[in-house]
Image: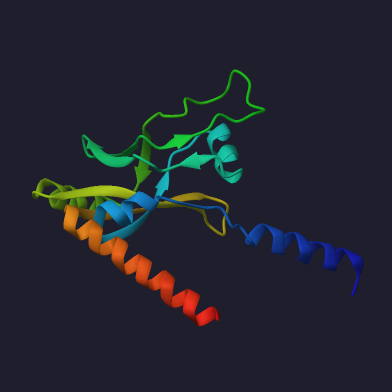
Length: 164
């Protein structure tokens, strides 16, 4: 096998193996996730570099409509270390990219009582673009949260027993 083919194959393997996946652990604890969608995000250059470095957090973030556009609010993307005066604001509102049909559907559901839109996962797809999994969610009550903790503990105990 010629050297240049081997090198090219190694480069392609590195490009396709993007393992950046930032999860919102509180979303599944606080909400029942009814329906999930994948949305694109409008980002600046330093923001995408920080996400590729794994420097983002979805804690305390939510999605809201401003006019007919959907924005994610409260998502923290750390400032890029090598970014100079071009650096971004870490907590700015970021526009989400969805089709008009999806936006209309989500807007109608959110207007119903009890529904909200929460970001679940931020990841880099195989093309190198940042995507955000969002979910139409309904809030849990206190007793639902206790039930979630019980099932998580019992699942953990079963995994421990399987190991031995």
